[in-house]
Length: 522
Image (cartoon, rainbow, N blue to C red; front, side):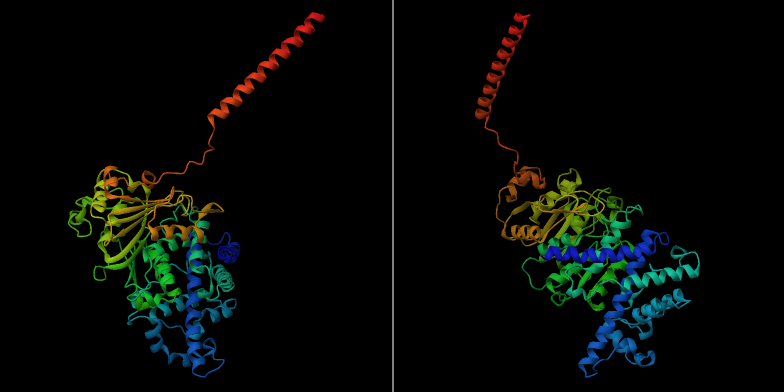
């Protein structure tokens, strides 16, 4: 039932987004359209979030029927300082999404109005502790861009359509939804437009079901942790899944991430706010994690979850500093310059707490390739850091059919065996992609927790066997695939063939007799 409800909510959200796309067809390029829709959703969310927060407080104080949206800007100003301290930002009543929308169709300067509103929201955080978290958040929503229309009138007409479309989305309270509306909108927009823009969506977004699996594995049976970290956080879906599974209040010191892509970095910060993660409970940085890590003072992390980009290039041994970097030097070799995958693994291991777990989506090639990558695998196995390898189904991620794997790292293992799980068949097909159902996820997580051998599915492998296999970590090396071919009884088959041959001979004899009779009659 839960899966059906999810798909119903997704369908409704997708129809809303398609309706906006239909309204703006031919007006806004798809990739830019994505930023406008997500940005306007964010504007609506924070407007409603602030309004609800203020209204609830006033109603509790005895002001029945209070509505911040109807308050004058002058009266609202009195609360600015306190709201910036508690929420990290401030919006005047006249600049709330609902009020700007009401005036939009008759506002000849709508583009200037929205530009001012976005600037005022960012400026409200200046000089406060939340300044870094709000700076540049609306950079990707250029309301004066020719991409939105060649004239001011056309731009404003499209902005009205955009406001109306986002206003009509049935977003509700995200806490009541069985889907993550913002994450789903992002995923859907990626699938609509990424291929047209010549961009791969896989590096930007981890589907929610994969996020669920990854995070449940990393969290295990813990009910609270110190910090959650993602070294390649994209839009923040993995960090937010940890907040949902544990409860954000049970991540004591907050959520940390780093993202190299500026647009996606902004989306990640937006996503934090959309999920009520207060500005003082997250720290998202913008830079290259491998060469310019920004959280040296915050490690170690008890939970690390990540889906880093697959086989990207990096400086590697062209940069002599990296060879002595304490994150990479223990392995005695750097990941190849053309394939940074294991550099992300080593970085994550270095920043993992002694009692922590890291769960990382990996390109399958790192499990068996030779050279430097084999030496790093050997280091990881010889030092007993790899807890589990899970083979996932193919076609889970938008933009790539690759059947990825999950590598689970731990520093404090109780034995020197590694668990291998073949979950390549654990999925259902939904449109063009495969998806993990709740049952699939439960089966994988249950097997991970029990560490029991299950024919054709899971096996705990001792160190010596892995070393004997030249440190190959491919799941298929250790978990036998079930032979689903039909078993044939050779003896029975031979008997049937003999009967067929005998019948054929009888038929031939009969045919020969009939022909002989016909020839004799002539």
